[in-house]
Amino acid sequence: MYPLCSSDTKTCFKIDPHIHTAEVSQCGFLPAADIVKRYHALGYDGIVITDHLHEDYISSLDCKDDWSACVKRFLYGYENAKTIGEQLGLKVLLGAEIRFLINDSDYLLYGIDEDFLYSAPYLYRHDPKDFFARYGDEVLIIQAHPFRGDNEILIKCIHGVEVFNTNPRHDNRNDKAQTLCNLYPHMHPFYGSDTHRDGDEGRAHMLINETVTDSHEFRDAVLRHNYKGAK
Image 1: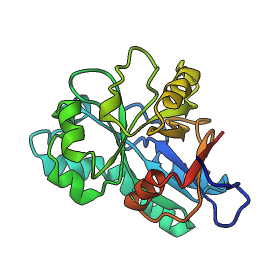
Image 2 (image 1 turned 180 degrees about the horizontal axis):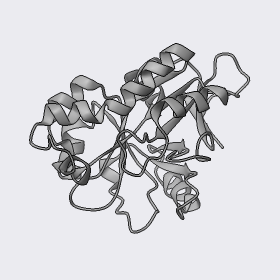
Image 3 (image 1 turned 90 degrees about the horizontal axis):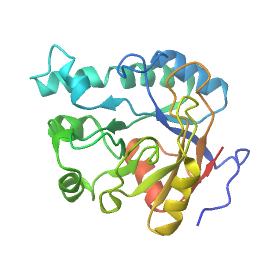
């Protein structure tokens, strides 16, 4: 399923697709600039900022009734990370971790950009089936840590699952996630550090057999199965 690719192969792009910044994620403790510096020192080629985007977060903002202002605030961590990344030569891509209103499950979104967010007001208020029907051909939807807690798994509403989440403060039951992924050949397995605080960074990554410069290219590489996970 995966191409031959190792971390010492020049054409191999090493990326962590699941990272939260202190600027945006209420559970994040590491500022974006610090995150970028740490991943650069660890030899990564890129990271994806997947800050939390859900009702509780938006409701906490003074601008909660102004979606454009909410998006601008949400992008703060990503933009800070991107600025430092450009200085150091580390690619910083935009993602998001959304939670719909109907349950406590979390979904990682890739293949998005600023224009997408501005044009999809309060996107997490969709029903998951509705969201997939509307955006499933445009964005990559990966269920984060599907067996953490009492998450609901809606197979027809996702493109893949996070089979290896290394956040050390949760029982992620990664073995169950891998078993689930194996049952559905169309599922894309994901590997991420789920970085929030000191010591989380660089515990997992994905190796892509091409360079990716934005979230759209990352999505396309995944859909072509042009990657493998590593831990």
